[in-house]
Length: 187
Length: 213
Image (cartoon, rainbow over all chains, first blue to last red; front, side):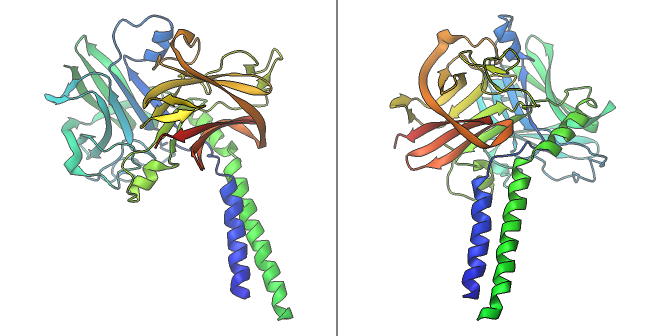
């Protein structure tokens, strides 16, 4: 009898909880960056001079007074380059990173930060949470890029694209006082 | 036996309390909104958006399940959208200050047009929808919404080009309780596949999606 009552109470609590599974706004909101930058806006203004090349979908954790690199994110450990779902990069045409050909399609981005450099990883396993299941065997390319100092620290993690010239552009990722730049070339 | 009853009563109350606090937590988005707004001024590189982007999968929480070792290799559907807030405004209506006007196309979100990705073929409103990505928008009316799939991807949500419409279906409006401060899209399980639930303020619509297998 007693056990039955306990089970009923727990079941009741779970049922009521389960009814309201509407997601709240996330503390690390999702965001999206395109290359060419602001492509969707340019598109509706009939103002695109170049075709769509890349899009990154990532979540933006906040510094919130914490020391990020070396403390919140341990040096030498794989990080999802964002928060929540692992960061996704989509290429709408073939590109080259560090002279490795990357076929158009969706990939997951990870990084291994250290004090002086980050290893940027492009991996084939998509639609996954975090970096807990990161599988090195599914890597497409790994590139080491030096850490640069951000003049003004960034409260929210960011990823954006910046044009170098007609055939290449940079993916720039930064948070707190660190930023890295990953060159990507059109194939 | 009788002297056990107060204990059960306490347990039941405890259960109610857990249920209510859980309930309360899940539908009170206010603190998160404040955090977002406060930090938005502090990033000179790319500011946080007032209507943050979000993503829902079917099966629900697919990436989490995959991380936890589920056998499913691929999700079935995913929606990527931004979440505007009511902020004390009239959301749906015909008054000059309502956010979404009856009869006028709405991007089902904010900023970039909302995108729906199908990883396999599905059936909606009796029609086959081929796997792939679509822009998703709607024309809200008081009693129904017209849901429209459009092939002109990677566009901002205003001025959606209707010459690229590939599919339209009408679905009835029902009441959303409790009313929602933030626009919300989720997939919920259904016997035939999934329902894409779209809700904001006191309005809810449900788009049934059948799996073609």
